[in-house]
Image (cartoon, rainbow, N blue to C red; front, side, top):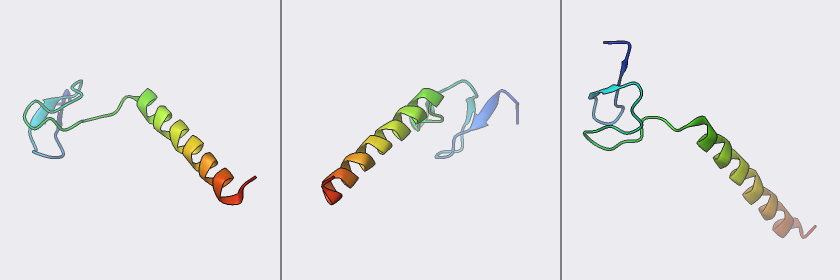
Length: 57
């Protein structure tokens, strides 16, 4: 396997390492780091609101 390619985890096709989506099946190959931080931040906000609602602080 070439170092500049990765294998799509859904269909197995060799895809450029810089690709965000598989051209064959459309699977998201990797999420940008900023996207992960946004998801974590939103999860903390949702959990915080849930705690406030449940315990009525």
